[in-house]
Length: 91
Image (tube, rainbow, N blue to C red; front, side, top):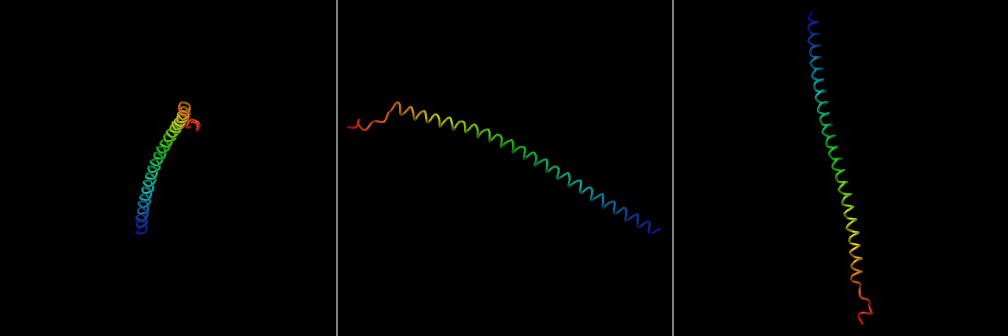
């Protein structure tokens, strides 16, 4: 009878221990899942920002190209309206 009593106590202690381990495992999994969701949200946000920066860069490239074209036109217009004096004009 004493052996049965000890066996019941040992079995109960093992079950409590297993339950504690299972609760700890579930809590760890939940924390890991929450962390993964946070990381995924951050990655998605970063991808969105990268795409926005790419769009701005493309717009800026277009603006820079337009400015360069305008500078070339201005330079050309300056040479047409103010031709440089030839060396014979100085004498």
